[in-house]
Length: 344
Image (cartoon, rainbow, N blue to C red; front, side):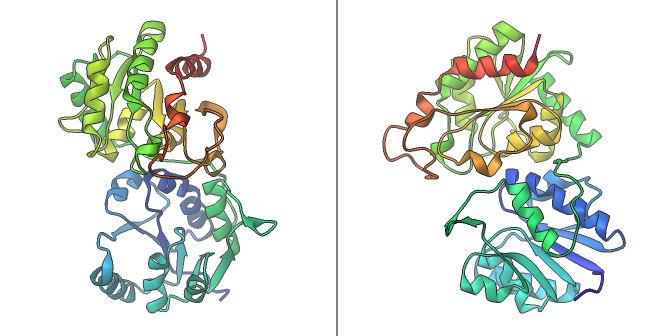
């Protein structure tokens, strides 16, 4: 058990923001075991997000769910010969193939008896007085590597932007009529989590226009593939020339370059928020149904805006009533928060 690992598998969380918040785990493992091969595994789209980081050597796609996916993943892991599996997601699926292939050390949280059986190093889910408590995700992930005897190497988030992605973004912006020296606010109006995280399109449009008038920032909307109509609606409602990058919409490598190019990011509580943190850009975050404690980290250049309503945080994907946590959060608050972050 004490032998230094030669090959380490790190199962990356599913969501973009969680994947970014896992980068300190990769850095800690690299520093503790510089001779080991570190292999990140996760959804194929996350490879573009993490590409360029020196803290891992290869990325394994895991695109398939169901029994066929489990069989294929198990066969592949069996041929890889990993010594450790660092399992950041809590799911049974994440732990099952490493257990079936008998990776000697398998570390992660044991949220139920079956998951505990699949792990050799099972951490209890954070609790206080018997109740589960929210812990910032980076801290939550680093507790796993600490349990393996790996010292932290800071909690800073990190991503790498390629020159090729910068060039593609420059062309996208030029095609949209944004001048090369024009300051921009990147606006990400979608959320894969569900409709409850979405700030109303009219609020986004008003905030974009206010930032153009008061700070000279051109709003550039960067939607995900399923969010094109939302971006088009906001651009259509804008009176100050907001543009929507929808043909095509930026991928994750382009999103990184776009955020790097920006003066500010305005976003729902979703992945681009953490991309902004990793790339050192200020972010205004409109938050409704989610628990702020889960992402309460690196707050120096973030402003998280919430309405204090009795039903929030509910963690529901769809609001069963009137979505008051988001509809009552007025655009003027986002503009004021941006001005505070940007200074004079």
